Structures are given as C-alpha cells and as structure tokens.
Image 1: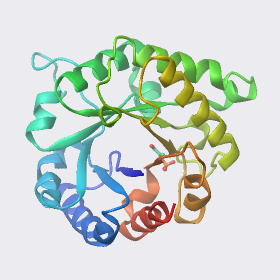
Image 2: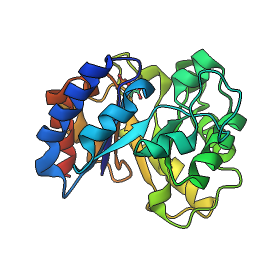
Image 3: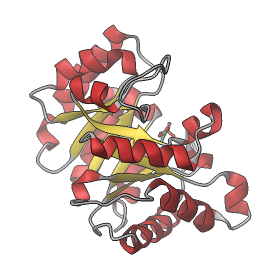
Image 4: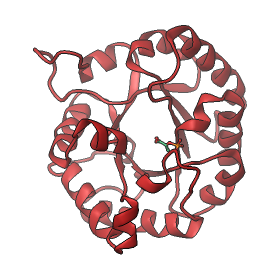
Length: 248
Ligand code: PEP
C-alpha cells in the first residue's frame, strides 16, 4: 500500500516543514506496512526533503517539465527534483490537464523523462462527470493510459504508480463508491498488463478520500492505496488514512 499526499498550492515553506515533521512523526509506526509520500509545492521540496530524510516518508513533486534544463521559465526538471531527494513525481493530475492545458502527449513525454532520471511517476487518469454520465469512463481512462505509457518499458513494478482520480470526485466531497473504484482499478490493471507492465504496479484511488471512507476503498482488491488531496493537509487526518491502509 502507498498513501501519497498532494498538498497542491497550499502551505508556505515554514508550514510545509511543520506539516512534514508532524506527518513523519505520526506515520512512523506504520512504516512496515504502508509506504507514505508527501508532495509539497515545489518551493518547499528541498526543505521538506531535509525533514523526511532518514524517515520512512518519501518526497514527491506535483509536476515537472520533460526537458533536463533550458529556457522554460518557471519550470523544474527531473534532475532538479532528484537532486532535492524526490522519489515520486505526480504527472497528468486533472488540475494540470484542466487548468494548465496538459495533454496526453505531454504526460507521455514527462513520464518517459521521469523514468529516464530515476523518478517514479504517479500518472493520474480519470474521467469527468459528463464522461461518466455518457458511460465513457473506460474509453477515456483507457486512452489516457495508452497515451501516457506509449514507449514505456518497465523493468519493475516499483518504477510506476498509476492514480485513478475521477475528476468529479476531486475536492468535491463526492467519492466513487468502493465498487465503482474497484471496477475502474481492475480495468486499469488489465490495461497495464496488456502493455507488458507487471500486475503489481500500484494503482491508487484519489478523490475525496477521508479517514471515514478510506478503509472501505482500500479493502478493494485492486486498490493499492490513495492519492490524498484535502485530507493530506491535516496531519491527523492523513495519519488516520495511513492507519486505515495499514489494516488492509
Ligand atoms: C487530488 O487532488 O489528487 C485529490 C484526490 O484531492 P481530494 O482528496 O481533495 O479530492
């Protein structure tokens, strides 16, 4: 199981350091059974990296540019993320797709670049409410997976994470039912395997996961953990979700 916190554009650096310290302290006792990651804003990656160094908590970034370096004002690259201790990088989050114009082909370039530099991409996929209402969730998510992983060859299941995040459940308080999430996770796993990926690639569920609904979601056979937005900003809630994962 993997529980990753996406802090989005929250926390000034001092608050990020404080939150990371609190998370590291609270999740220590579950380190044997659950992998935990925090993904702070890029301005705090280095400082949070220092806090979680020598703890079981891993560091992740929320996005990156596919180039190693260059004239890309405002961007950060995979080597930069690696240099401050990142293990993971979230790619293709629906907010990046909807608000910043990211497209499947770009997610693919970033995925290839992350892998080439030893980062583990957390590739996000998920359908909108209209797409679900139209019964198109498998078509959309299948297309996103196929595009993101074009040309990807995995030596190990540990080199990739996929997050299924139905857009209608992100930050809305709406959660996919455990059965809805399980059906999509199974679909994604089969799709990954058809690409030659190991069955053991972790598939996280994301979308309004809270301490109260985490256990039912994580009990599903194809749900390998969670990508947590809002609830990851509160160390107590985040630790409660980690605890729920530890009991599966
Ligand atoms: C997310 O943005 O990845 C997310 C799952 O957010 P929330 O938990 O707030 O729905």
